[in-house]
Image 1 (tube, rainbow, N blue to C red):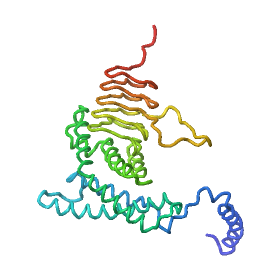
Image 2 (image 1 turned 180 degrees about the vertical axis):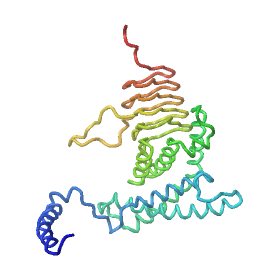
Image 3 (image 1 turned 120 degrees about the vertical axis):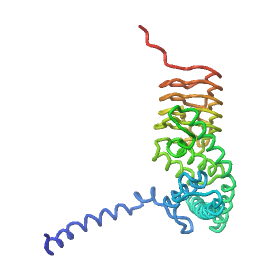
Image 4 (image 1 turned 90 degrees about the vertical axis):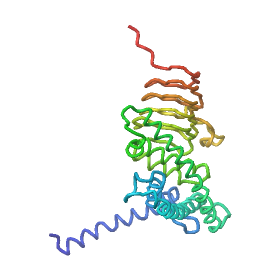
Length: 307
């Protein structure tokens, strides 16, 4: 057991070292590149609150699957109303925080204006929930029809990582379309860390979409995926090159990811890069590398090795 003298000696040795570290970490050359001062003193978006919002939304969109209590149809309206009211108020605050994070004092707008915009945007999002449920129900049906191991659409809703990824994507994409900063990306990364499926919230994905297995799938920001498409694990829909501005910075927001038309299947490990189009009904085999357009109905696979 240490005596008092030993403790005092250790403190005498450590404090000057720690003081020097503090001095270096607070020096502008180190601090300026990572410092964030919230605009108008508004806190950063809360990861815990966003996780709660997502769990509440999951319970609202799939009643009976993820509730802590038994859900009855005769009382569903009461429980759903209370849940949606909570979601709306929590989401409005998080959108407000996201707006302030993006603003960071750069725009000549008041904090009250951002708060009002947060409430209006949250309400606009809430109106999209019936359509989000419709799309997710189609995704669950596609999982059931596309996977012989699935016993029902309900099993896909409750168990499949692709359904969690698509829940987050369908929600994140709507917020992205409403021009909500940072929040959609947080929501997509929650699913990415949980499932290994990385879908940028800007990607446009049509009805009845299914990712089988899913681990390692990457879908870039400007990807467009048509109706009734299916991807397998390890598929990448990525950018081939990154154009730069005159000052050397990357050009943001330009279309740079693939377009998959309706009824396209892409098997495991395939890599499709650039703003190319894979035509309707095409099948892309496993582990191929594609950087040019694929005609409708084509079958693309690896060449067989020569004897």
